[in-house]
Length: 276
Length: 276
Image (cartoon, rainbow over all chains, first blue to last red):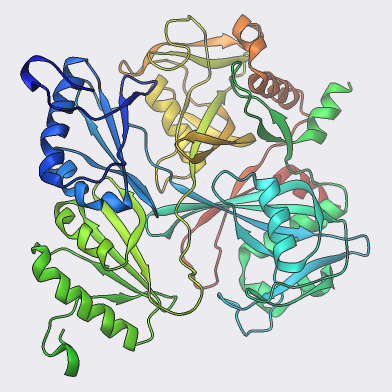
């Protein structure tokens, strides 16, 4: 792509338009920064004339040599992943409406409860409880693009070899500054086991077993963990039939959208109302 | 700080230990990369001898000239915010246990419901519904470090001038790839208004008013939005007294922790059980 008149035959960066009056550039061709700077300047000038507002430039890590030039031309960081850095620049006079970066990590904890009143517990090789002999619930992190109800089933399978079925989100906790400035959402989930033979993952897990809930809840360490005491009460209320958490219903968000998302709602409360 | 023997008087980077056998460096002093590289190499060599594993280097944007040197020495990107880039490097033989970056953005939608059976609705100046005349719920994004129950009250106040009190999370939706590769959690919240006089925020909002819920739910656009139809049913079930969402209870996560987090649970279900 070339621009006319003022930029006289200087090649411009290849860009695609976004839905908000901006452009997205994905750099891929290695070049030195002295070649890059005039191309970048001509491109910015071209986009300004077009009335563009937000400029997004995705720089793969092997083109790290171009990052300094972008910052010197007015770009700043938006987000980064191991293999790329996304920079942004707002070239309009209007108020900057560039959306914020992801702010939360999402974790899951599993109450896998069988018909004998036992739950699935583990001892981990690392972390707070390492070497203490305490039994705890399987927990894990939700991967990028992964559903909460799938993540908790995967974590249980990975750590203990147990297949399970998602029942509901019993509760969730939001906490802050858990990891630099980032926040954390932790979903406590109830699962129904589909198998019973445990096979532990040797790397992360020291031991796993089925444990009567009362014995689990009576462990001395529990007394100091206010959060876990709440979770234990919730579990008992659930077992007594009094408690409803939120269950996933698949839905679409937009009319044009073929992406299925899960909406987590109190299905029992909704059903009672609709059956009136 | 200086190292002995081999590194002979080469200054090392100032670092603090993290809780996982690693070190964190916050660069702040401007220098050119030819000065920086030998200091960085000597520091890495020193940390290797100490048996350190994960190395974290936070580079403020004004020191962007040092990023390329870090990548060439084996570092990669972990995350970025507008004013800094965090790089990591794993120098141990063991499996890399560097935690993942934040994966989710968190949004809120507000059902602010008064005693007359009206809800608070707005028309936005930008977005999907711009210029359509459709009335929708106030929505917004949860800031880094902000509680969900505070964020939704803040958004309602900002957009409409209405003071309100958080009641509960009625439901939440998780969706994927909403913003590059990132996922999204959207919490639908019930609020009780404390004031009634509307004062709109001119920048984002075209109009706001109290609208009978039936009239809101009967808008033609609603028919195409599966998610909103679910939310409407939930609202009606709630108004009929059949539905319980999750309400926040303040708690601490760790014994040593003085940080308060909110655990969102079905307080009604729990109360019924405990009163047996």
